[in-house]
Length: 198
Image: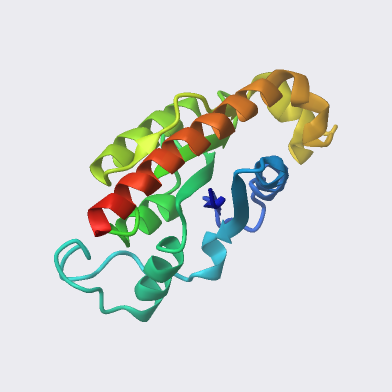
């Protein structure tokens, strides 16, 4: 069985973002899984405008070149791990816009979540799962939530700025569960997509 190609999407574009640190950590864990080939997908690299197409690409091709490039990139993957911050109880505006800029490329694919913040981005994760349903995606049950004392131990603002491996005892089991579920759902969806294409 071929490896699942997984995009690790960093959802914040702020210059001072924290997302690179957990993204690199989960990338290494994902690539240690023999069933996964993962790579970072950074929203900063795509310079997406606010969605301004005539309609979703579910109904007609997009016209904006950046949106088309984004759709092409997303179409390469069998599934995703979203590394999410929580802004005012939801996902970042940058991620919501990126989700809206594609449709068919998200369909019938699995995703997992690594969230961070004072409550581990738990509320943002639930919003993201709801959006995923509309995009015909399937979410893993398990997710990684870097919150509370763990968040401040590894974030530069907490003054300790420890490596994420230092909180592995709190979040490692959740990460492993999420990755195993991502493999199961990712392979199930990949097989179903292949059967549909026949």
